[in-house]
Image (cartoon, rainbow, N blue to C red; front, top):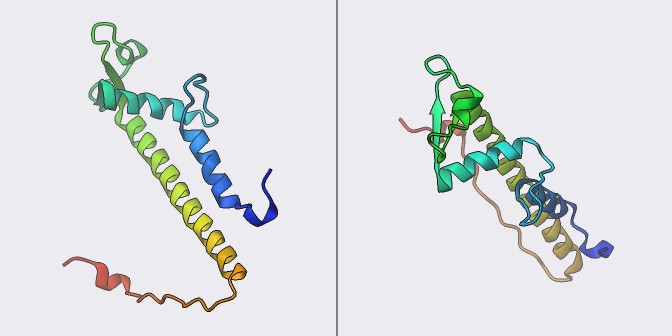
Length: 134
């Protein structure tokens, strides 16, 4: 257990997000079931190859997905690939939010523990209209 002074809930959340996404060397069980499919896609992208099919033109059956003639390939639909990408984006967003919240908690702890003067840092604000490319 940690002491109350060093307890940072967002970093604990980031730890559990890492446990949810990453797999251990011995056990290949995930907390989130969608990660199993995403992990298989990542493995085939990195070490083998991935076939992404349009289901209107080329329907995918279970025999095609695990083709014995081409053991290096893994076939998925465009919708499955899109769902996996959106799930990964949500995990990345969650990780960024937890990391910034963890840094914020640490900065608040540092600010309350210090006796000296801490200078604020102001940032300029820009309207969204200025950010668009013409």
